[in-house]
Length: 279
Image 1 (cartoon, helix red, strand yellow):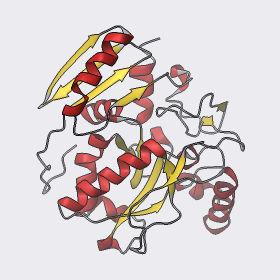
Image 2 (image 1 turned 60 degrees about the vertical axis):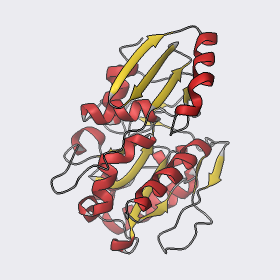
Image 3 (image 1 turned 180 degrees about the vertical axis):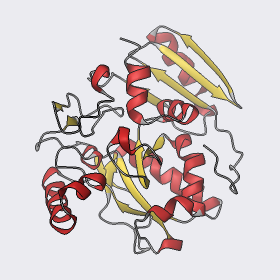
């Protein structure tokens, strides 16, 4: 989605993706896409031979997340909750109907090397390794075009989210808190694949106004190139269960992010229309 008054960077990145589950390669360069099925060995040889051509790292997806596509777009939030099976997938669905357990935690967390909300070099905010690699590239690409992003919040444990949610309930009441804060086990931050961001122009604050800043508009147009989506877009609260959050980035992988961007989908629609249809 291109917002008025903001030009895209105009840069095209060649992208190769090898999906081991489906056995296919997707090649995208200068707007042209080729999708073809290969054997595993053929695909590996293909990627090794052409890997040096890519400007972005190769994206490998080993398995589909275990998700019931028929209930991915449910509106009965926090009812008939299902426990997520498989935290390792980059396409893991965590929302108000799919939950993580208190013991679920990624094994490959690391500190992301970017500036934090105080404009200091970050020492505490973590993401999963692959997501961390890509968010660092995203921040670097933004900075190269004079867009100054700041990291505010990344991985949160189940107890951390529980304390945060209970605080918001106490301050705002449960009904209002449920619009912007996930109950424990239902937060994407627990996956290590989500990051809340702000900008220097907003002094590192989290606000809807971020969507109107040059940095927020740049993210709408470019985040998918690095495998990220704006998880809770404008005017989709009835479907996501969360208010518009232009600051909330979710890593899903380059190929899924491009599909979501092209179709103007929310993540649940990708799960239903792409993962569900393949079953």
